Amino acid sequence: MESTLAPTRQLLTVRETAARLAISEKSVRRLIGAGIMPSVRVSVGAVRIERGELDDWISERRTAPDDGWSSS
Image (cartoon, rainbow, N blue to C red; front, side):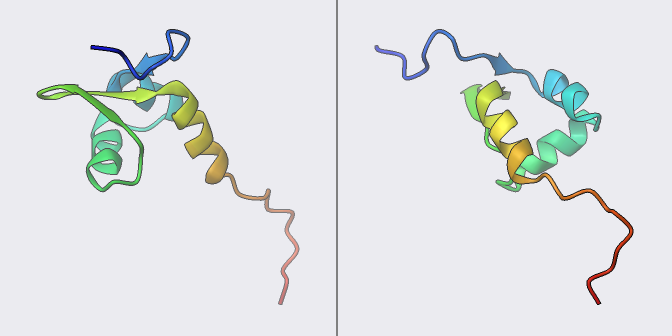
């Protein structure tokens, strides 16, 4: 069976992802369960997050810094 992942792609555990985002593992699992965070199920009960997809996911959610000016 041929793998669809290139050998250079890194899969992160829920723990590694939580540490990278400075949130709890439970929060990562909730985001995955809600379909908000991309993930790969590698076996029953084992989930991984592709590092490049996580980086993209983080970039999509970046907000502009609050400069103290209101638009209203």
